[in-house]
Length: 108
Image (tube, rainbow, N blue to C red; front, side, top):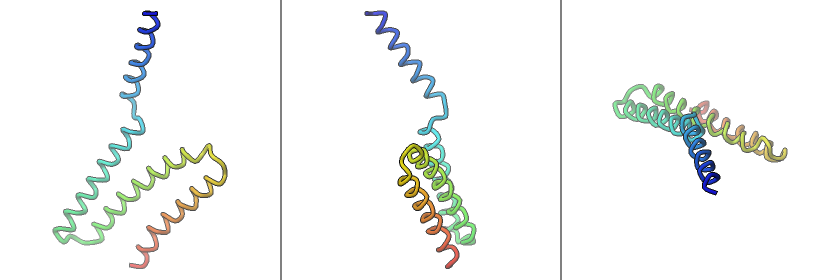
């Protein structure tokens, strides 16, 4: 019994160490969040110093686009094995997000 226990402990520790060294979903999400936060801080500082508003809105647009792409990829991974109704809902929501970003930019 002691042999089984040590083997299972070794396999669990091997799984933990191998998953922590890879670029997992959690690690990628964290680094993307840090990069987007930095973009928002830069755009905030530029806005505080009355720098051209086109630059500020462009930085905010890039940050939003990065976040939307990451979320869309994760959502597709969730929806892919599901029924067609889920895929239609995914496409509809993605189109609404894109329209919600583009239309206000065109109207300004």
